[in-house]
Image (cartoon, rainbow, N blue to C red):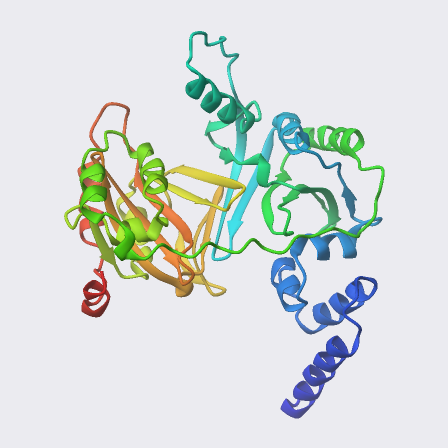
Length: 393
């Protein structure tokens, strides 16, 4: 096609998109025009271009055809995920604005727990909260997930034929703002009947495509550094006995996570170059080092543990492309990275330009044993942030 013809076609498509009214009734038409122009555009990216949420676009384009709207309610997402343990082999997909983690495998079930007696009121409240965010499994093993179900809102079952004619079946969950919370794709023939039963049992009586999507919550302003008792905070950091105590410490001082790293003890935090994530993954693959990758959003965090193989840049992302594990990082959107030492554990975290945590990494270690020296050496060799960035700490 001649260049001026391509330009004319693109201009026509743009004009068509802008000419069609932006109301809900025309969303499918607007999407069809956009898909004609950019057939490889992911649904999430198409929704952003159309100025709607992914959940709204999925519903408008699929309800009554390839999409079934499932029930809503405080306990519904947890019950669907509990039933999804029967699906067998699945691909679990969790994402945020600048990263995607996809893991294929079988989720483990929890063993029956004995009742715990004699807990004080605070401990009992903490235990109840933790149990509300457990769906009978997914703790450790191939599909390793942490849920915050209060942030799950909409659920859909999607059954869509692929280019090869094989039907892809998935359960897709979204938060109140229509952002993807988590997705599960059926990966076995035995799971089809289970999927169909879940759809039948949780089908929403109303198959309306209209969603009451809430505006994204406004992120609270970060406390001024001058309002933080940095000396006290650093002393408390040095007294941590478990890495899991860090989140509570940050909350107690009313800080953002990245602010806490910026103001942490100089011998415990080292700022590194944002693109150091590439060296981390390349060296982990080269050395065949077991790592843990944590990636999530406000509703779900997914964890991968193990070795990685194929790493490469493609499609605007830096990727791990292994048979049962894919990690896609839009690292050009990263703003800062940090090597962090807490309670004898070294980790690496990367943040985007909005101060949101995208992904974090740990070295896999055996219980009650020190972390591997190879992991410590790998993190120590990561390229440091430039002098200007360091000076701003």
